[in-house]
Image (cartoon, rainbow, N blue to C red):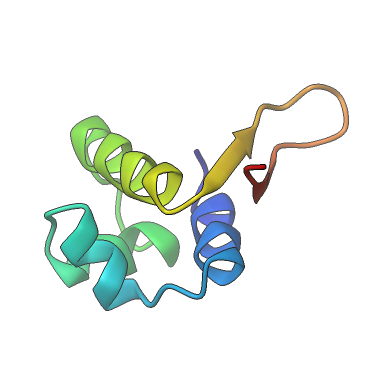
Length: 74
């Protein structure tokens, strides 16, 4: 998951960075730093962010020649 995918996924489910941090059991600064690419966050933090967004209804699309992306799960 890329920072851009995280930002897009939040937009799809109308979730703020604060709400994502709470859902992922992370500090808000971790989410902000990841999405703004201020610093490298741990793989555990990235997985927590991804899991929280998937729980909210987002599906991550892998890079397959057309670019990585996100969409709402059916």
